[in-house]
Length: 243
Length: 333
Image (cartoon, each protein chain N blue to C red):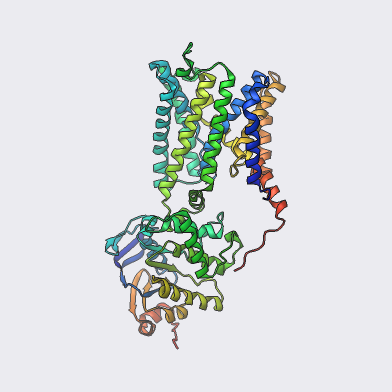
């Protein structure tokens, strides 16, 4: 579905991503992990069009999308969430989602249809649907849900979820992980998930790609990757125990 | 039916419309009529500006579009005898091209916020300096007077009778309100708010940032040029200082900011107040204390902008809203 090959991004003399290649298969949840500064978010930014890659190709559903603007990539069915939620603060929660449903969908959506879809998505992620409230009234957990709802409202085929569990308490974390499973299960959306908290991620994902200093150091099933000595070293000796 | 600020504004407009057509017949003094016409035309221009301004596309160079509009029709009439009815189309087309030339690179290279404001500021000045430099056909800083039309006033769009201009102004003002309200109710408003807040996030959910900004700038410029045409035809004299450059550009911005750029009647209230204030100060001070009128005008603006950041009308509307709904219920989750 998504094939990233030899993706490179340089900022001046600093190489944030060096010839990273990986593939996302339809229907899977792929985990993208790595220590701070390993290039995960840069990788997301390149794939979603926020940054133009220095070199390499990004093929999505057969077309090269490297260097396209985020709105065009979104219309092709690839949407992302941001690590730090970026709600539109002047718009109501419902409008935040409706505007994404109206402008982000691959096919033209009427305003009425967009509003209907917004309510469905709000309901799915567990935000109040009757709400004219502003995002500023939401807590950290609510903002994360809104971020996800807005991305889902565009009707993506592939969702790039950037550290969607950061800043949540353990209960919220478990339900958010559950949420991503439901997104795949009920909506059939393929997911690439970037996450710091490895233990949670490892239980949910089908495969993992590990980045360190802008390079891919491991790829495979969570169990195997957790045993990989290079991964353990990258995470400063921290070994992930899977039950 | 509760009295929300929106409904009150709507009711006010309707009530005003009921008496508006008869106002000039009630023996209104020519001078009063002149002030009201100016308020109508400059409000229309302010409304055009606020279409961009309210979404964070702060232009400090709308004088460019105003000047292009006013000079295009005036020069076409004076040199080629082209009727302003067609001339205004040329004027709008030129303003649209100009808007595109400014907005496209700005949007493409991410020139937003203060940098956008500075860029437009320069554009307004460039147009003013061009008008002054090309004095052979623009009249330079002395300005140009429209050639009198004689009795062909319809073709020349020249009317000595202020009553005609009162109705023209009224129609323009209503058209401005209509465009504003139309945009306000559409999903495009939500998209523009989103772009104004966070372009990257807006683009990530599929909003075509460049296209929206271009479209809005072009619309705003076209309407501003039309306002310039109306002003030139009414005054029958154009001058680079009053129709382009920093001075007039800032005057448009001040009026709208003063009234409140986020509300339907904000530009109207702001323009009416600034024009009334400057007329009043002019009469009070006359030729005594040269500069005093401008000083007081400036000081009042500073005070209003500091203490009523949502504008006079906007702040009043907020107050009404707050009194009706003492405490907004906090959202769950």
